[in-house]
Length: 262
Length: 287
Image 1 (spheres, rainbow over the protein chains, first blue to last red):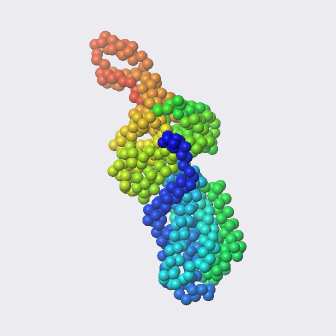
Image 2 (cartoon, chains in turn purple, blue; image 1 turned 180 degrees about the vertical axis):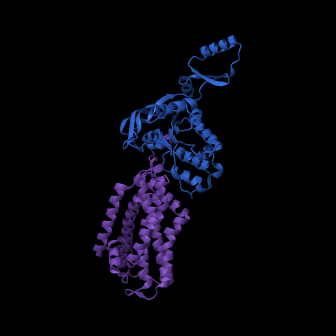
């Protein structure tokens, strides 16, 4: 085959394009110190601090194990919801998304690479948290790794859908981090990421009962702390699915690729 | 071959008609300037051609494609420099080029493009460390990495200091020597004059004149003859400068006077442009 024939016939296979973009996303993520710190390191740091503060037992479990479940779920929301939303707003408002649309990179490939890249960051963070727990407090690894992975990948998908939906309503890059954390941190407190919620008043508990993070914590709890299969928790899965589908539908209708007109 | 054909193009945003029936065509290998004040419809027109916006009416062919329904080939063959856009601040110039190169089937070599836009010495520098002019060169490098046949440049030198501007002009001229078709929008007249083979002047969403820069200056405004009479400045505008000047001169000679401060000048492109883009305002002011 001549060189010319290769050139003409070589449509880039979708998988090569996906892997190229995934590598690019990883480079962009880890090269940004702020993103790497706030998205990757911060939940690990919180686990380090909280597991040093709480000792003894919470709900009949060692505090280190209980917090591990809560902070894995927090890390999921922090990475897939907050991190993704902030990055998308920055990219949209700086014109990167608009510029990418003029290239042959298909939007679906772009979105998929970004989501998988976010998942890679979250999985590494989860692994790091388990290693911290193991080394510092002797916490076990999940007994059913398959169920555990299914649970956190579902969680990541749901929070990613909510992240893209939130990115669709945030109007400026400057305020994006504030808006996202204004949602994330109270949700994490009310849902029990940072410790038990039974001393919160009924009103605050009721808010927590509506938000998705509580159900992800419950799911991770069930799989990790109680060794149940992920499908034994239909209520958690139903609430998470409802939030995920809602976020997805909102994203489909409201997401824009172009910056606000200035 | 025509690279771009536009006829009867219209686009409104709500009640604002941004583009009101625009026709033009651009030959392959031509550098075509779309000139007009802010809000004349330049960016809307270009973004329709790039495939970003849907038109309300009219026919558009870009490299044989309808940009609203581009085939997979379309984006392989165009390069776009947007009016305002940034890139990842923490990546290097080379990494940024390499990422975009990966999107195209037959990209140009990364280092070759970096050299073409004059960023060799900055190839390993982070994007955030570049000056404004260097960032704009990076934008151009990214637009050229896929080896496009057609390059869109939307106000490529807005906000540049004169030196950076000259450097950008040199680069745009080098695109012509590469055989690229270029559609350039600008509100700087000297830029259109310096770079374009042909210029279309856009005003309020309509093209008011198309031609080479030389044609635009010869067709429109009258020649100006200025002199002083009894200490007062006199200005005569005429289509027949030879006859008017001969009459003025012979009258002055007959009186034994000198036409003080005599000047005869052709209107510059700038004056043509200002006249073309001002007519509407004057008409509105008069009514």
